[in-house]
Structures are given as C-alpha cells and as structure tokens.
Image (cartoon, rainbow, N blue to C red):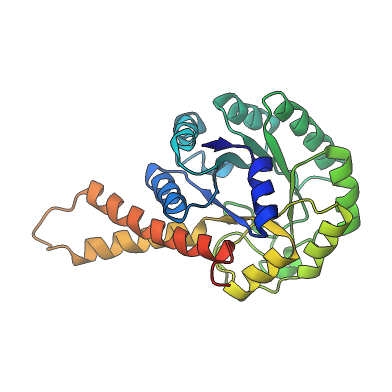
Length: 289
C-alpha cells in the first residue's frame, strides 16, 4: 500500500525503530526489497537517487515503483533520494512519488534554506513529504568526493542549533544529518557522533532523523543511532554489492562449455539482494532485542 514518508515515520516513532530506505534503480532490486519487506511484514521505503539517472531514466522506473508500492501488502513510501534540482523534484511528484528529498547540502545555508522552502511548497500540492539535509558526508551519493580529502576532514557535521532554525522555517518532515557516516564503501571504521543526533532531536521537537551512508555500519552502531533518534536509514551499496557478488559466483560456477544467460544472472542477483535487505531490515527493526 502506498504511503507518505510522514506516515512511515509515524510508524517508526511508535515502534522505536528505523525504517530501511533502499535505492531501487533496477527491477531486480525493486523486487528484492518489496519481497523482503513483505516476508518480514515491515514498512519500507523504496527510493531513486538523481545520480542513478544514467542507469535508468526516472520516467521509466518511477511509474513501476509507484505501481509496485500500491500493490504491496505492507506500507511503502516511494521517495526521491538526493534530488539536486527543483525541476527533478517536480518530475518525481508528477509521476506519483509520495516523498522527495531536496539535497542542497553543498550550497550555502541561505540557498539551501530558500530552495528547501520551495520544495516543501511544491510537495504540498500533491500531499507528499519532504526530507532535507544539513551538513556534508564528504562523499556524494554517487561516491564522488567533495574537495580532495577522503577522510573526516571533508565532512561537515550538522549543527543542532542551525537545524532547529532550518526545520522551523522550512516545515520539513525529516532531516538528513551528518554525524560521521559516508556514502559508498567504507575505507575504515566510521566514528559516529550520536550526540549530534540526540541534540538535533531535542531541539527540533523529535523530528525524524535520517542516516545516509548506512551500508557498512556495525549492528551496535545502528542500534545506538536508532536509540538516539534515527528513524530512516538509507541503504544501497552493500545490497548492490551482494547482488554483484552473487552474479559473479553464478558465472564462475557455470560449465565454460555452456552458454550463460543474463536472465539467470539477474535471478541470482535478486535472491542475494533480498537476503541482504532482510538482514538489514531486521537490524533496523531492532529484531534481535
């Protein structure tokens, strides 16, 4: 069933859990995520990032995501991740996305504030929710790095007092905070500052906090983040990596004299992604406690 981010975040608050938000820039990933959510009877967020446009056009995969969400047995939010232009946000809303993220984190605070206000206004026309971001995780969603540094020196942690003003003036439904995570593959163990999350929650009246760069974080740190107030966890890199590894293993195990079919590779990748997503969703739902 189709749901907004605000509705999904209400469920997360009531259960004191985080809901997984998974990028699905291909049909196999979309099927894997929704099957995992239905198996576990958990709400889920499927999302498409603007940087994935070269993989598949939003105009093609977006309607499929909306249709699949409507037909799902669990609450599903269809979310635009890291929308970098207001025009792209409008395209997603026209398709039927129930949530958008405006990412103005590399802009000045004033420009980010201005554009986020506009994003909230255009989302209100369709009843969609809005996520925004303050701070910088060093690497962009695509894995590229801002500037030259690839360690913590390239990160700008979210200022809780600035977050209080920003959320009050924009009326957003969730805030992506920079507190030590990084997009993509972790080159070293992240050092997370959970006090940033706690302070932002306190000063914003318990606004749902979003963790970007969620893949590769330890189970213990996930649970610390959730206890601090994280309610949405973005997860893609390690899910995608699991699918790739399964595809490679499938090819390796085939008789070199026999043909290899892409459809069989896709099925193997989908199954591996589903298991990876299920494992992540159990952690986010605090299922081991």
